[in-house]
Length: 76
Image (cartoon, rainbow, N blue to C red):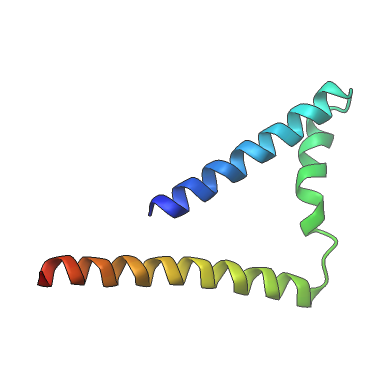
């Protein structure tokens, strides 16, 4: 769970930095947010599928690791 929290924290931090730099360059807030989200809007269906697959694999791997670790602690 710590890995997921750290990943989300890094993602929020990088997104905030990107939007802040856009605002400092004189771009409006709504345009800055749209620019941060836009890379996901221009993807093909295959690219979106691959990103979703990698994201799903990341979460499933972490969940299985957590379950395995809890079972190991309870059996010890």
